[in-house]
Image 1 (cartoon, rainbow, N blue to C red):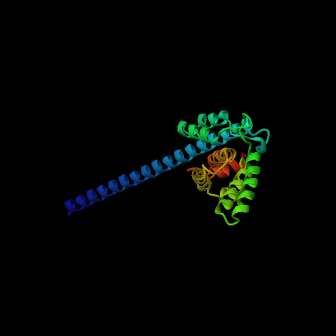
Image 2 (cartoon, helix red, strand yellow; image 1 turned 60 degrees about the horizontal axis):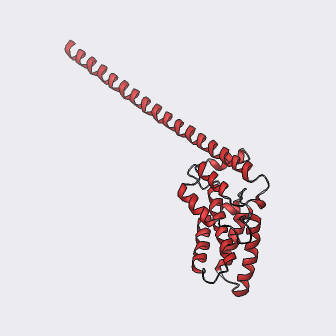
Length: 217
């Protein structure tokens, strides 16, 4: 009888030890998961803060005179590359698109590009009022008008798609388009590409939108 009781007691002790070990293992796993989540959140917060600070610096350096007078310059493209918003290859492509006008040495401002859209749209309507290019141009104008302060309307526009459609039009109309219109459209495509880079919500971290709103950036 004593032997049975001793064996039973030993089994109970083993079960209790196993249960305690399993409990400790679960606690360690939960702690590790919690620490991992905390590190991820902190990492995202740091990235959000860094991005917002970079955008604020861009605002101070290039948009202080207002968005209407902003134009895409080599210095601006270089800044985007330095801040890690674009790669060296993307910087080179943007530089190629943002060609200068033949009339002077400056690139068209956002306001001038917006006016070009109005004029070019009017000319397209005269030839074909139902041309799909008209809607593409108007969406591009919405993005430009909200270039440095994206609204719900502009953020709902697929900027990448609009940019590609305009580029396709340029490529297919090279022979018929006047050089001045080609240059303006190329600069428009470059402006759209940059707007896409700077628009909150185009990033892998969803909190960037709310962070920028809270900090008025």
